[in-house]
Image: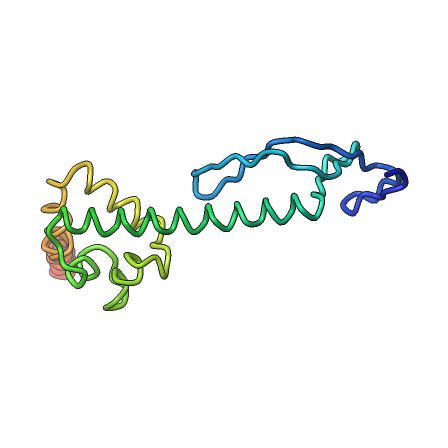
Amino acid sequence: MNGKQCFSCGTHDGLQHFEGRSFTIDFKKMTRQIGDISGYECRVCGEIEFDDGSAERYSEASDQLLIDCHQLMASEMKRIRRKLKLSQKEAVKLLSGGGHNAFSRYERAELAPPQPLFMLMRLLDRHPHLLDDVQALCEGADLRHLLTSLDQERQAALAS
């Protein structure tokens, strides 16, 4: 189709039709290929506009990847929590500090866990012995000791 103007850069007659291309959909470092995509590509800026049918298939594949990733993360959260022998309540208190039902929502894929929490869970899966360190850090004995030392230093400075 001649005369199609690029919506992105405004180049007249800039769009060239393509058919049968494959594209990679990426979500949180997980990918999926979708093939046989048709549409237009700007020869100047590279902007791509899919045909209606291809746009619908791409959108559906993207949505499914998102759903699959959330389900995978949810099942991993549950598996790791159980491996660590933590209740949902204990996991919240120890690992996230979130609301009382946060882990339930993560494990049902109602809510994606925060990336740092998911990374911590995966690290604990690989190194479960670190859970003892996490528990010790949560108790705060090391911070209380530092605070006591700071108070003693201040008292000594005031006394001199």
